[in-house]
Amino acid sequence: MNIILSGIGGQGVVTAGIIISEASSAAGVEVVMSEIHGMSQRGGSVMVEVRTGNVRSPVVPNGKADLILGIEEIEGIRVIGKARRDALVLINRETRSPVYLGIRRSEYPEESELLKIGQNFSRLQFVDAYEMARKAGDGKAAGTALIGYAIAERALPFGRSETERALKIVLPSKALQTNINALHMGMEASNGTKTLVS
Image (cartoon, rainbow, N blue to C red):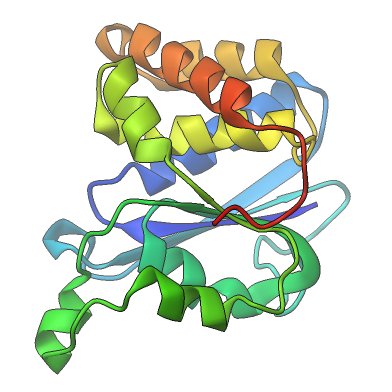
């Protein structure tokens, strides 16, 4: 299975990738992970690739991703070209202008524009993961909420118990309960369909 997580520095993209890797291992699934940082300390792009199963390279081939978790809207859409047309694409409705928009003096695109870019992906869904995470106690748990949503959509090779075990390994104790809450909220938010959420 090929998974890509994308966002900007400070959103916990790498942490979410490590959680997925640990949960896959807990489920007895072989896993490899790579990470690519832009200017992550200054709002730059961050992308993490996770591959499960009998694979040698941690890099997801173009057009082969089965799951995209966009922890920031524009960054999630930016990597959509790496996904299969039938991939599940979950985009968090949180907008933070990446540093390159400022450099180019570009405006942040409207969600309708992003939707046009992703119109060929039938399983593209916009998810209020940031709001779930905020209600759980910390907006930085948006990645965990997206993981929960993906679990409920049966898009990951593990379940809630393996994820909770991974959270205990990866996170400091002060962030644990917030992330467990965000995980559960993400799972509850999924309605089990594979259609576009407007």
